[in-house]
Length: 197
Picture 1: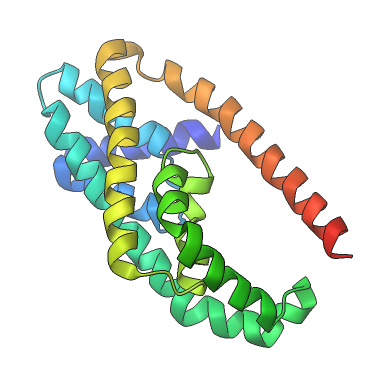
Picture 2 (picture 1 turned 180 degrees about the horizontal axis):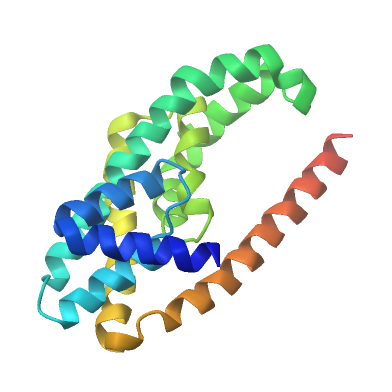
């Protein structure tokens, strides 16, 4: 029921203001707000099917929104997340050494992590927060977020374009995929917690 209402609101918002609506919604999605790109981009693809949008331009706009949202999320992680973890991290089994570890990890693997995470449901929404906490290079974050999001946005828009009026069929698939990804993250977190103990 909530998913349907959200879907209706998103489609009305995009229909009202066009390309700007896609940009705004994809910005919010990448800023870790509950706006599913799996609704936004397929509907944009459907509007491409109707002749309202251009497929390549809407993919570019979606990726630009993702990049913008990632930068906002990064700044939150850098300015707010770090002080929060320094002050309250001990309650989550997180100390200053973990911050240094995060910085080293992002310096070593950040490029690949940012790029490939943009192709994964759930993970793609939150990767910029730890990147900010880990002081990853902001210019690289913007670059890899854009180019990592471009195939994601194009793929979803293309599916919406090909499905035409049946574009909503893709949402059920991604709902199942989200559950799998969240389950894997939880299993990994449990494993890490046991390892830490």
